[in-house]
Image (cartoon, rainbow, N blue to C red):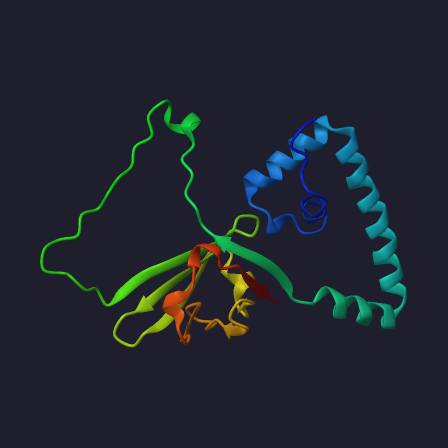
Length: 193
């Protein structure tokens, strides 16, 4: 059978099904009904966690250790978004829609620089440049805001880490000589707690 769910998705299905979207849960459930290999993985995880939970219930120091390791931040790699039309979705014809810039608006205050995305985590970081201050603004966009309340982003290329504002998920920064940056190849790390 093709398109097996990743093991961490099966683990989430078992341990934290509410963290998956309803359609994801249904797809995994249907797949498990048809795939003995993935069902074996689920059963192995089920027996592991049954023993794990039993041990934690009996030993307070083990529970403290488990709490420490499970509360470690998760790190996800973000890559520049590149739109690729899916011909199967549109048939033979792919339509491109262009928006015309109206007269008299030669310079806008904000310029869109780059959109970074992590498809697995359904997170998007939009980078805009404030043309008046030459600062950059980052906006974190996700439908799982409760998981991103203490998010940071790191740009290894710039050796810079930034913390997103927990209320509106934005941050601001400046870069020396940022005009020379090839934003189409910038990779970032999104760290969540």
